[in-house]
Length: 281
Length: 322
Image (tube, rainbow over the protein chains, first blue to last red):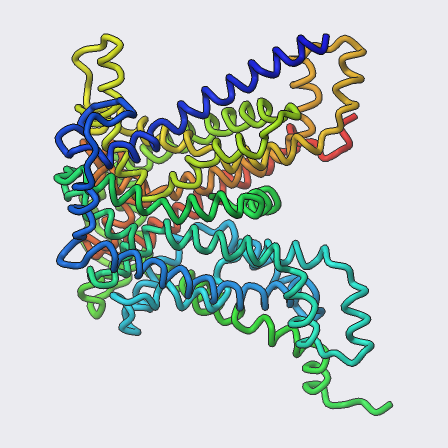
């Protein structure tokens, strides 16, 4: 009986691994192909390159319009860092208000925030663009980064509200009896105890900012401020033709490294974020 | 006790709440409420981004422009006297998007649930396997993967290379063939079943083992157990995944944009709704029309979400599962 379980489990393991390999094959192929000479990439399905070269990385790194990929990476990292700071400050503040404070109109405002969770972004895209254009912000990071300081990512507010509501009320009451103000409670109790949810918020802010394309396409109009995603698009010509496949695959591979590192070092926060609020990856 | 003035009292009671909520309130008013009202208005005008000063109210003109071809219209005159031409590609983009949503969402959920059940067997290395299956979702939304997808499904791409090694000849270019191009995008979407899978896994873990044991004792086979224990108990999670995946599928943009090289692909076979909206608003500067399109999208998503929730009375159980 026990032996049978072991055998059936081994089959399950084998099946899971085999299926996983099939799923990951395109990604592995991309990584391997980025090291193949440009003329050997085409339709060579093998995962073992016949010749290894770094020429794709050299040609891809040259970037676009005289701006190298090094600059694009710095731009993306800059955007992610600022976006994380903005979201951590303002989403946490909003979540504290919704989750732990009592004030007139709280329930109706919370309901409105929940509606914005499901609102397709495209309804506000055109007016926002006109608004930011009037501010003279098109062609800068401001249209992408300024909203992060106004708690516009409702998903994170919701995630943090859920988390803060689960914290014990007693700590807060004790602190208030000791003469701590509501602001004091926020900084000394709520923020430190919410660390796991804050890590999840920072992580997904990074992921979404790094991967976002639509907003970057609209607002990053000058190659000097291109992000990595926006710059990768320049490999694909207007008719969809790609001249430098090697460079495209090489830079695509590089663009994924930060995501891999974060995912494998902080997997538990990913899973937590997705399974508690349905944050999509 | 003396009553203080109303305002002071209001602030003493509510001040902290509004202080902490201030950034959100400003953002909500400036970046959500105002834009929504503005875009509703824009949808009834011929606002052109390059000449905003000549904007005119055209009533339902933009909406007739979208749905006119349904009634055989080509040119029409708005209530305000402007002659307009219907949009010959709108219904095509709507059809492409509906096909994409109705094909990719159910497939993705079925696969996500199947994999979640496969992994939910108290196996060693679960978190490693879960990570492996999540990787396509982690990376899939990026421009990098969209570029890769183009490469995979081109005439001389990897997929045809693989098919050739097992003897297929005369293979099409999947990306530029209007019969297949949309399905490569459906496949790309289904490949990213990771978040739904993680949510299903969390839901499956909530189902007590005893239910299955009791059912086995009563002689219920695995299929029976699946339909009378797993599905009902998981139905709230299925509902959640269905709604969230549907909403995001309607808004898919990046993959179609990259694969079509910034356009709708051959014969507009991958002209997603949001891609069409983008082209109208930003390539042709027809921002009034783009706003109207956005409102129709909101309406469609709203109606479908409502219908799903309405139907959930029939198939979602929130009880203890007895």
